Length: 274
Image (tube, rainbow, N blue to C red; front, side, top):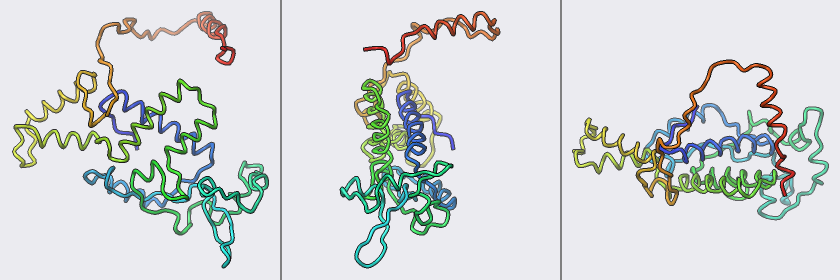
């Protein structure tokens, strides 16, 4: 489903950047996040509960990568690949062999792992809090945010971009752990503390108007609410300096397109900058 609109541009940018990076993580690290559709429906129902993000539990896949075979002295035992990052276990099979891929790009490890597809795997998912989903659980589930950081290291993300992304991820982590309120909780608290609210579950026109005005002020950067954004300050949005050229629907001539492309081609490459 589409993401809910947040109150500020910063929040929208944070969640949008996180979702895009997460898609790259799943593709690059070849992760498996499948769970039964019935559990997806159950998660949707649980998400409707009050303060679900901070106190609720959701079904999530516990092993996102193929399990590795080991021996605990009593027979075959399968453990999470990610446990090696925590416990320092290098495994019994050389990584070069496990990483060999076939013509479809599927590694030997993923082909050999029992129920790697996740369609019929028992014990493939479990209940986790949003904090555990985002930050990790035990030595078998690293968490989505640490995986994004690992991906940023993998692509050698530049320091300027990483600083911005870290700000987004820190904000998302605080939301997931309950250190910051969600907009739903904040709105609920706003209504309950409004002088015109009588505790009868009736949101009058006056309350609704004041709530919308306050939301507008937050979005425009005119009002800072620490319990929503912590130390993040939203620059006030004004009409000054707005781009005054109207969008033109007229089609460009070929020569103009080529001229623009030549200008772009003439720019210095980022890799050439010292």
